[in-house]
Length: 373
Image (cartoon, rainbow, N blue to C red; front, side, top):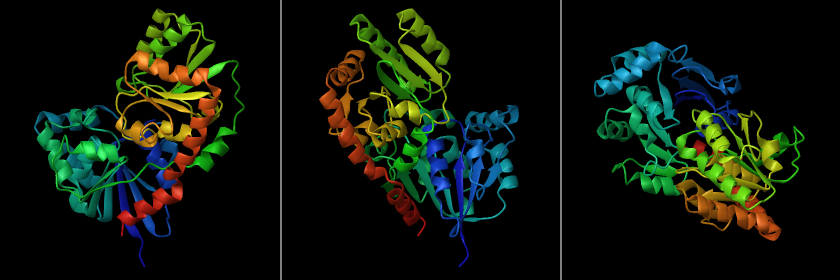
């Protein structure tokens, strides 16, 4: 029996959660049954060397240079006219595929819509809650153009049921939908967590993510200030990089908490730092499925998270971790509960570990393969 031809599409391989999930998925693919290609707009990013050797890589452009940026701007400026993108795509994509998958909303979906005739089945993934964080609007000339792209799909996959439900608040479509949680390979993460010895001298709170507006790390700095005023022996560490790094470090100095907040930058292996933490905190304004929350749960680290579609679902509406509102005071109180109560920390650690079984590799991969039948 010939192998099924699968084409995945994503814009780049920078250090975001969706990109990491895709690489985790590709590492676990059954290449005896599928031939997999990966189309990227340009080969930039920290994960570009992690693509499995079995995957055929197709780059639309050599790098994110002027011509690449111009092609996307041209599409938006001229209300969906896409000559440059179509021309480049047709040069790179010669054959046809059994399944074409855009693995991220935004530009990946846009590229997919221009070659959907190349796929017998077309599937797109949505990793965020578009009702609270419609970041993809920047990729399209208007809402109607984005809706047309989704309308051309045969199925839309969401990473949480809440994000799936909220999608209808933005787009009223008749396309079939389903929910598949992101892979969290807890056993592999536990092995990686032992690769480096990490120790902390005091109670440590960790947060992981791209330093951008939606992650709202500024909130964590204001929370640190409250603990400083209360004279708690506690430190915060933020793992990640992004466009807001300079502003966050400036705010850190202005608040006078630079001695209790550490910016560790991007880590290829953040798990030793995460495992040894006393608490994991997410301050995001919006999440479809927070990979970092899921990984903390798998490592048995108790979680405090602001209410988003993803955190509510991951933490089982507060049964497996503390959910807070988005103001600084609420986040502070949520963390303080765990700082002050070791028994409560153990309770949430145990519940989080049990809950993480819902994101097990075999279970998620089976759901993905069923999409291809």
